[in-house]
Length: 111
Length: 116
Image 1 (cartoon, each protein chain N blue to C red):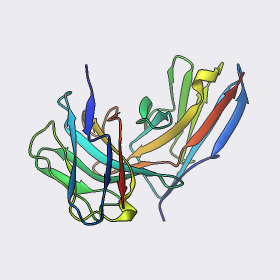
Image 2 (cartoon, one colour):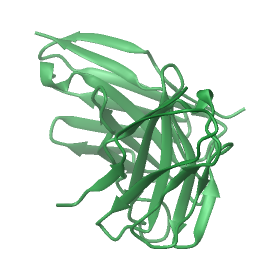
Image 3 (cartoon, rainbow over the protein chains, first blue to last red):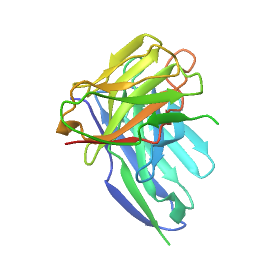
Image 4 (cartoon, chains in turn green, purple):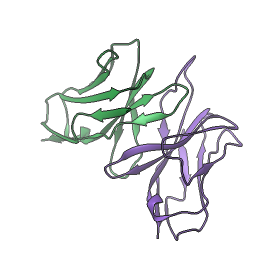
């Protein structure tokens, strides 16, 4: 069956460290993978998009990798800050079909 | 300002009373979508639309209807709401990337629906 998983429901890290979140999927062949941030009671906010033929994408303190062989994406936040505390969602774009979101990882950056 | 608007933001209703949640975007996006979000189940796609007059089922379409008569609007209709449709609903829109796929999805602020 098709499944998309994110490594842990919750992740606590110390301010200044690098947070690494994992997104694994099975039985999908997405052309694109996206990462979103969601704060409580609010809609998700787009962060990064990576294509199937791209290995890595960066934006300021954010970095995303996409390994279609392993069926995995890693999302890194370097020099993390308490303001980075939120739930992070990965989403698969099954081109011509629907979007599928992972369950999310709730990140807490401790001062 | 580029945005997706939803109305109402909060709604309490009773079983069987038809309701419509409106969604509008001002970015001329082709792609629009409805999601519901429930604790422990995450964000699940209900219906999506690639363009005007084109709609498709997502993962949880039962009990919902949509229409896309204009590019900017994508209303979600619950003909006979039931308590299991109590949820937080999000509308989203996106432009299409050249060739394949969709670009950034912009989400609305959400509609919290309670069906008694």
